[in-house]
Length: 187
Image 1 (cartoon, rainbow, N blue to C red):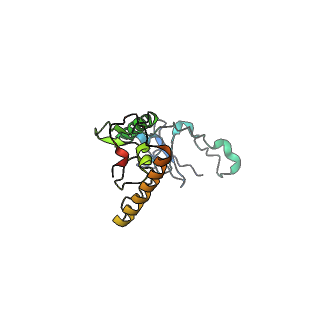
Image 2 (image 1 turned 90 degrees about the vertical axis):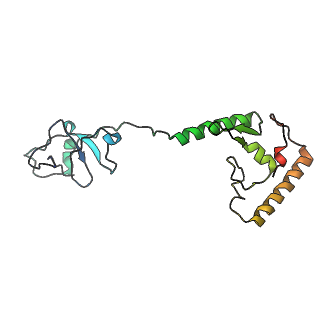
Image 3 (image 1 turned 120 degrees about the horizontal axis):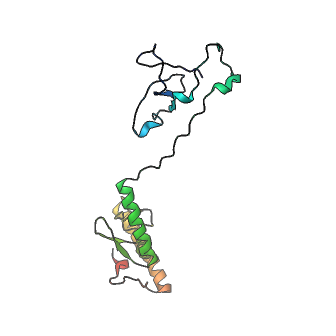
């Protein structure tokens, strides 16, 4: 790798020890003083190296060879940054936790903290036995009836109802912690 020590604005002026520069894969360097999140890289594969850790080339060294590895600077470790979660991600984590707690308590529904809407749990969907086609948040049937023709949807629902009837004939009707209506039969 060829090292260049110059100021892009004034190629005759060397980089001062207080300036940052970038070492790139195309053997070029440039000044880049910034106080942004991109402080350690510029996003294009360039790693920022402070000039104080890079040895100045000696005028005695006319040829570069692999044996001069002691002249290659050590690249400082870039601090690990954790991605900042969006508001939507935080809200999703919140309702996922509420859903998990509702399922553990054998509840059919929970209240969405942001909207106040009543949301059916995965337990209730599984007990119903089919996808209703309404793109429910916790659909365990991979939304198989969302966006399909009415004929396909009705056939899938009929099959699901038959499966549910077979299960209830053996196991009986479910007992829910929040049993105040028969939501498993609602279509």
